[in-house]
Picture 1 (cartoon, rainbow, N blue to C red):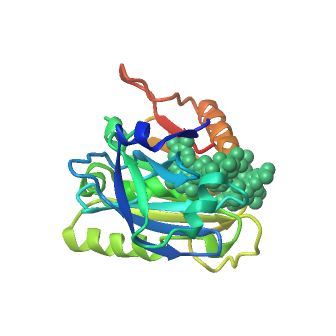
Picture 2 (tube, rainbow, N blue to C red):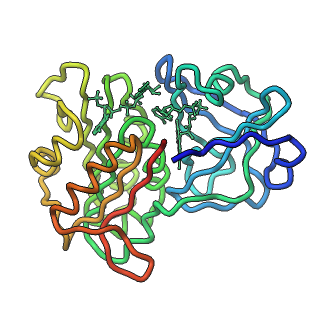
Picture 3 (tube, helix red, strand yellow):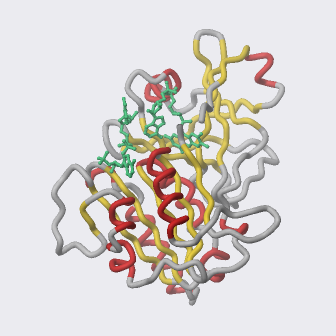
Length: 269
Ligand SMILES: Cc1cc2nc3c(=O)[nH]c(=O)nc-3n(C[C@H](O)[C@H](O)[C@H](O)COP(=O)(O)OP(=O)(O)OC[C@H]3O[C@@H](n4cnc5c(N)ncnc54)[C@H](O)[C@@H]3O)c2cc1C
Ligand SMILES: NC(=O)c1ccc[n+]([C@@H]2O[C@H](COP(=O)([O-])OP(=O)(O)OC[C@H]3O[C@@H](n4cnc5c(N)ncnc54)[C@H](OP(=O)(O)O)[C@@H]3O)[C@@H](O)[C@H]2O)c1
């Protein structure tokens, strides 16, 4: 899926608001989280993405970014990878707090938890920065009240790329303190570094192989079934395609506007 566009600043300003970069946190040399001011009146549902624009050579280059902040926050936060040679991310990498970031006034995307009207478990599968929408979704109290089990599965190459782990631990504590019923299962799948079997929830291998082989269900202590499980998958498009096929083999189908279906997916490129 292409998310690119280059337009003049004048044309872009009709649909976007010129905001400011507020904060950058670097997880690794290639992974960062950043925050911008939030346009007045900007509305989104957790799981949606914003389209951001950066000024490059007198034009605006825009790309899609999932929002990681909670719906009520005054700022917008995102989780990004710097793609080697990437037009947008090379500029993003060089931004300093105070620099302009255009934010389109509309929010986009259909990967939101409120679209599932039934099911008891919410499975959230991500590779790499595909984790972003779940950081926002897990900050919504409704999701902890609506589901019995929240299963977050993050697939990365190296352990250092397992971002937001402290945030998830904090959300689990907050949920316990508030008496919210859902249990959060955090599974981390690492492909290019040896992982110690003693660390709970830490698995070796690709999400797709671990789903196919039953290790994800075993680690969560749950069965991923048509009746109980509702699934989101986000990130690497080849992973997403394979997950869709694996879910179909289990009798599941994509969520439909008219009702029915068990999964929803988002490709990042
Ligand atoms: C709906 C949607 C939501 C998105 N949300 C995010 C997000 O929250 N965070 C984020 O970092 N990116 C996200 N992306 C990807 C983002 O829009 C851009 O593709 C990315 O910023 C690269 O832009 P670029 O101009 O630097 O590189 P380009 O020159 O456009 O290079 C694109 C190539 O870089 C690789 N690539 C692009 N994005 C990623 C990625 N996220 N992880 C690994 N490899 C990648 C792919 O091989 C792709 O073909 C999203 C894309 C879509 C369609
Ligand atoms: N030039 C290229 O062709 C190319 C391709 C991909 C990424 N990149 C660049 O490399 C950087 C790394 O990105 P990233 O690590 O965040 O993303 P990523 O390459 O998508 O890898 C993240 C995780 O997803 C796994 N994965 C990849 N393909 C999968 C599939 N088909 N099914 C299931 N799991 C799959 C990876 O496993 P494995 O370790 O087993 O792959 C890894 O654990 C980015 O900058 C990106 O632009 C370049």
